[in-house]
Amino acid sequence: METKSNQWELPTTRDEYERAGICLIDLPSDVDLLRLQMIQEMGEWVADISPEVGAVQDLPHALVQLAKLDRRKLGKLYKVSRRFPAARQLACHPWLIKLAKSVMGTRLVSCCTFVNVRIDLPEEERFLLPIHQDFPYIQGSLNGVTLWLPLFDTELEQGPPSWIKGSHKWGVLPVREENSPGSGAKSFSIANADEIAERHQFESASVKAGQALLFSTLLVHRSELNTTDRPRLNLQIRFDDALASESIERNYPEGLYLNDSFSASYPEYVQ
Image (tube, rainbow, N blue to C red; front, side):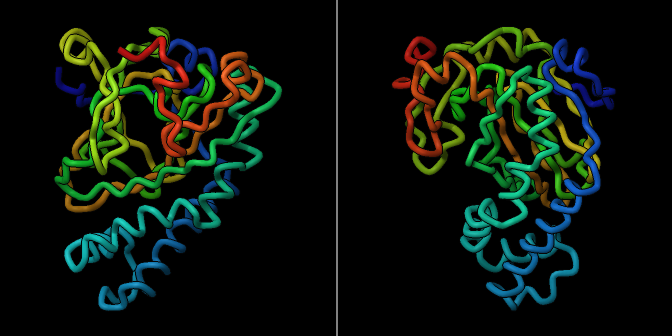
């Protein structure tokens, strides 16, 4: 089923979040300053590692140029940028922790050590994620949350994620583990993904710089193609409930990024 193309007005309250599994938030100034710092740090890396790109006045344009000159260097930036100071500060920012506490209804938050920095080039399909939930990858708490934070304005044509409203109430969906070398993002497939795509409407919305999407780790969503001439740049920051019984009972699985297989951590959800 095609993604709904018109702008959906995202919910902004906790009650609406609980119904939809996703909401749009406006970032306070100190959080947004870290977004700008992230842009600066990425630009400095490009200027130092690839001086042939020239002075980085416009990071998206510079990244397109870098990809044309040496696609491998862009891959290196993808890996190192999650370690930049701005990314690490965002991953444990007090305001975001307070927000996560409120949404999850917990007294103590677990900050996921994996900060994913996405660099999606125009018309590039190979790294897009099919229909999925974040939980099998992160293996945090069932009430965990993901913050999708764009570095620049992200219009619908640039392919912000699309989702099925209210799908977080379906619980953890059965998955198959896939052998997908070089693409950890495609390590799983939802067992009935085709049926879901046929029966349910996906929705999406543009997200401005200074805003972010906050959604449940169980929300069913997917990547969309960037059909513009500028890359889509965003960070994905995740928080979990440190007091969740499923995490305590299973000794806090680290998730796919530290090679904890989902079939070992949660075998009941793997076909």
